[in-house]
Image (cartoon, rainbow, N blue to C red; front, side):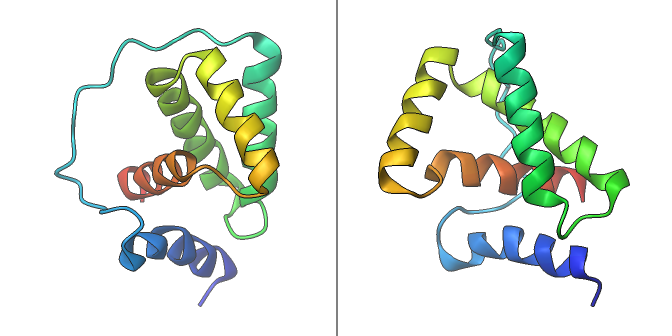
Length: 110
């Protein structure tokens, strides 16, 4: 199996562990997005690219990262996003909300 497929399977497979139910039927209207400062947008995209470049081909990284950014802005104000990041740094683990967004974007795109 290609390494990107393994990585994607791992990302999506987290839902199989009961972390997040993954179905395409979960289509709730996306709220109006919050506007993040340009440096925050760039940082989110940079981090996403770095996290996915080991298992996704280059042509799939950008759509996934754009989806993740769009969902972050739709679901969290910039202040709430910063609080989640600070909490994640203390716990040394990604917030479950972020993993859920990554999984949802992967399901939507792939």
